[in-house]
Length: 193
Picture 1 (cartoon, rainbow, N blue to C red):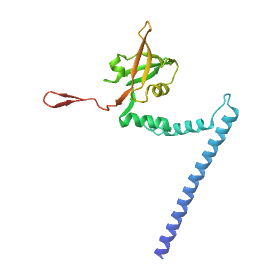
Picture 2 (picture 1 turned 135 degrees about the vertical axis):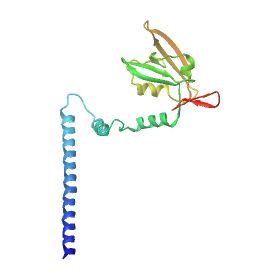
Picture 3 (picture 1 turned 120 degrees about the vertical axis):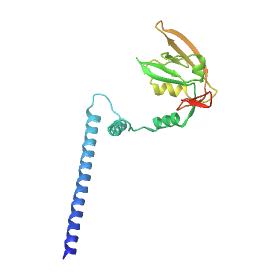
Picture 4 (picture 1 turned 30 degrees about the vertical axis):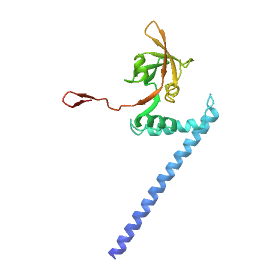
């Protein structure tokens, strides 16, 4: 008799587990249905034209970003760029840039790179790349243009200082090695980083 009770309890637990799993699955599909319905409403009724793929990608980015401050979804291009930055080298001129007041602005030239040797400074604003206006250009596009085949030239027009003095630089791309930790060997074989 005790064995029959154990079997009965086991089957009851299995039944509750199955109901729980199926109800969670049903709830998930219900939420996905709501998501699809909302996406269709946006595609049909939003004031501006929308791209379904962009809506889905942005939803995925939001989902990954909601997990914690370090989780994010990267599309293929962004993922490859991140790999380049973490794996160690690329062909370029050696600038860290950011968008500031609709201008590509130099954060810093990397030591020993063509940009550093040429005298490009932090806070310089890049107004032209290869003769084309860079005003309002995204940082991704600016980086894409400045990176490329080692040995090829990149021409930058920089606006510097309050008087917005324009300076032209013609730089030759080199292999840029990314140092994750800078260090110096001091007297007595002591490494400072």
